[in-house]
Length: 102
Image 1: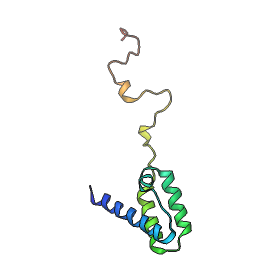
Image 2: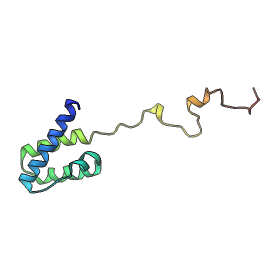
Image 3: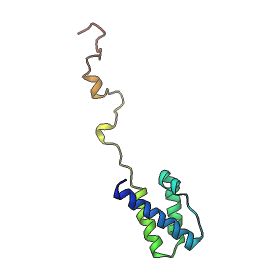
Image 4: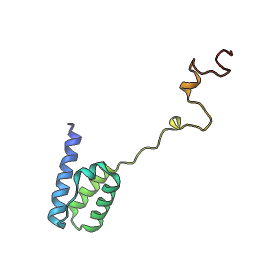
């Protein structure tokens, strides 16, 4: 386990304990790590609810780690309709003029 993973686990544990102490609320850490929609809803809710600076900092740190923006696919990865991928164009099995045609 990397040090970054351990740091994330510590943030999650601190978040859960402070949330229970300050607001008497529970959070499912497994769902928080696995489900982006759940994480976004919980973190937004706690951000609006809390007046505690330390808990707010934890929310911001967790949002930065758990809800990293998903990068759009690179332009070369996007398929153009009607165009064959490069691997198929250069393939010797690509029969442009039939099985025996040039």
